[in-house]
Length: 222
Image (cartoon, rainbow, N blue to C red; front, side, top):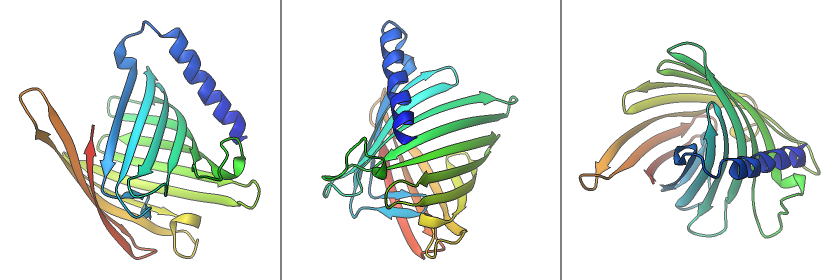
């Protein structure tokens, strides 16, 4: 299943590239975040700062993206994901997006086409004005792995500040039972470099009530 999804996403990306060679540049986007630490859904990965590059092709409501995270300190908590997403408007203030992600964690022993290092996740995200609701289900049942983790999150945007609360089970919590695991606030601003260029920065305060871990993350987006 994981191999098939990976082949489909990579194939679609290649087809998109070859059939849109003369398309407008805005269909392609690239970027990178530099974060003081990698915290995802309330859990910290690795021990130091990380670079998180991304490359995506967007056409209407459809997008294909590659995203990674690589620690500055060592080849720890490395991640290289592929995902496909389709979103559409329900009304002037509401939209929905469906996403399927293949999470891969590279290492010296990991082989890309060995399903034991891949995690497969369908996700649905609903936006209702400033309110967002997300539900995801991650699975890997190959080899010694047996992952069936659910995660849900609600967020609310207040201008350049957003608050969020997420709950999950399995990897997200201390005892694997379903519990609150990702509560926090993010504030962002544009740092003006000159008359034509500004740099987006943000700070997030993130608490995992289940594991009792608290992190503050600084992010620069390029």
